View 1 (tube, protein in one colour):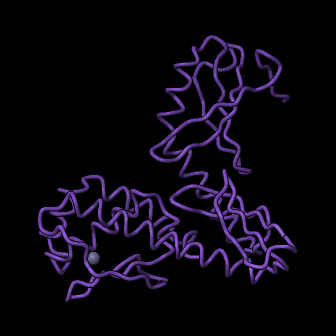
View 2: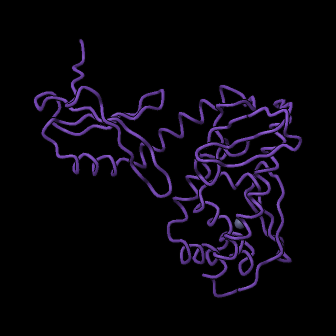
Length: 254
Ligand SMILES: [Zn+2]
């Protein structure tokens, strides 16, 4: 069977959908009304999102239908990305995808013989590493360092913001970063908070959840029902945020 591939203007128009802090592109294909009675959203294994809609469907209805499926689409896209990242090991070369605050950036490695010091900067959609004689090892080191610096800054800022919403403390706890493979954060009995710098790859909301979790431990040291009451009170949607973070853990911990 050959599928009909009509589009009103000869090509499939592309649109952007937003879900929380994330977005994705999708292409829209109009099909004759008799072929497709409903709006359908597909995620292809190559990560392309395609929406099929009857010719008579108003664009606003189509956008709303996509919006309603956006969490499902993003979950699929994340699964695809996760699978891909397991298949190919990171090589630290241009074109690889890097995560920061829940968004993807493309790594761009620029060899510049005039530049003695290696720099790493976010420019537009790129994480740009520039310097002389950039081997994968030097690139990795520069990116690693950049993540740590960003994490230091982001965690400090978010801690202040989250603390501001809590009645039991207004002072920043003593905190430091430590790379961990099984934890995003922890809080010692004497109130020192440890945070995993890999967490800076997650969305701001996920970061806030981890910070809130640790800050709740300042008053409830164990995972008691009182502890969960605090979480529920200050981030009612925390279970969803946690589930999402756990699902992506493997992608973040590389
Ligand atoms: Zn805990």
